[in-house]
Image 1 (cartoon, rainbow, N blue to C red):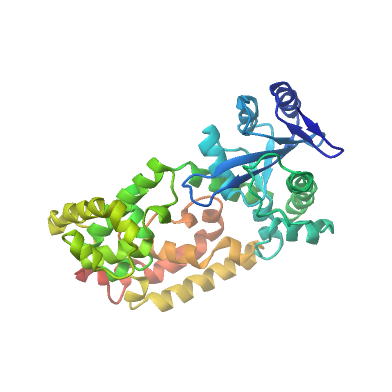
Image 2: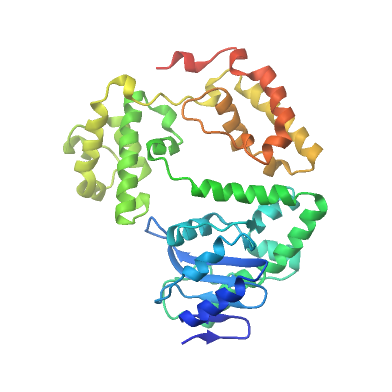
Length: 392
């Protein structure tokens, strides 16, 4: 039976869902949020969907027999701005459950960064700072898959979209006034585009921050293990760490065990990992050992291995800081340390570096002059030494 209160409607019937979706198709702005559980699983388990079109606030139960297609259609209606806060995990939920991503998207956390010198604010802090309302976050650890949900839990969930719309209007108005609205939307669109990209399992081993410590053969083993673990996690819907720990894969790559006895002698690998997956992990090792050395991944140089790195980074940050002031865009949003390093890696042709976000809208236009000046001094052909020429 559909539950109602003065502030929301709890939807668990198709007729109520259809009625809301028909109404929401006419709105200009739709606030969205999801509640989910993700402790041991690879994919988040959706427990509740919240939506507010300015007239009706609904809590949709995805655990009952509902055809959610009318709701999913709202996500790609180009006439409706979808508003979320800190969209990353919600985007993943929408992608898994509907195969779609919300567009156009307005992320109030990104907007807040533009307006608050790059400071990242949680939803509660943003609402309190902007609207003067203090929200109760006591239900943040709720098991959203358990039924029935009590009134306190539902009230908490409703607040996540109830105050999202006024937050959107406050932020959007100020962004328009300061001439930052277009940049804000482009940054949110970048998050959607990134989420649309499929995971390149051939590069999973690069997620290990200590991979630079390994030789080529060891990297080949880590690559095989990373692919195997990811495929197992997807197949069994288990979080990566519940298949095998990062530290276990790294230790196996270093030790190169040839049998179960030597595998068991590696410190700190949990016995259950060996009992369940020992043979599969050894097969990964053997596949990597069978490769020709030239077919193994290149060693992973650190930027600090380049003698010019410290001065190059300092100069790039100086130029980008000047661009930040010139265009009145907060430096932490225009260029993080990670993005600065990403750009240097790309320009210096570090193996497996990815296309830098500086080469994508909106940053490209704002940073064109700064990056041109940096390349004049620090292009790869002007380096005093290049460790890539002496790979082990």
